[in-house]
Image (cartoon, rainbow, N blue to C red):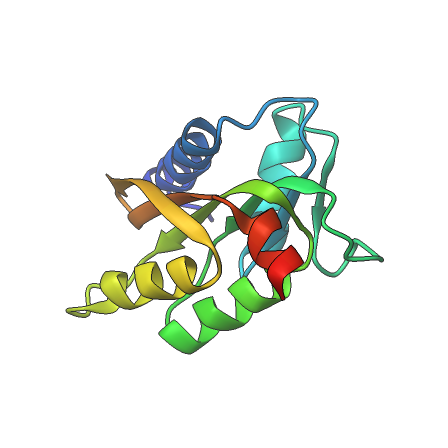
Length: 147
């Protein structure tokens, strides 16, 4: 049986991710991480029909405006999810990452990794399940063209 508090904590994370990334119905969103299916279903229940997971989306060609990562417990798992999701994101995409580790310096490591991928951190919001960090790609098209 699911605890009411855990359901509300999960919903709080979904609400926070939606608000931080400014996700709306016309946006394409891609979801990654060990809890990606739960997040996918929560978004579908809320009326977001243009959402997919990295396993259900066939061709990664930078068509998604929003990326959401949830359910990670280690830096390695978050980095793997970031690598997986990045190829699906557009050059001006927004991303939200749930960081549930209380390990010192963990958030800074995730932030550094996001910045290496061309993201600029915009906000971090504390939730019951951890910290939701949001970022936007900035000047990524120029970086891609230069490479």
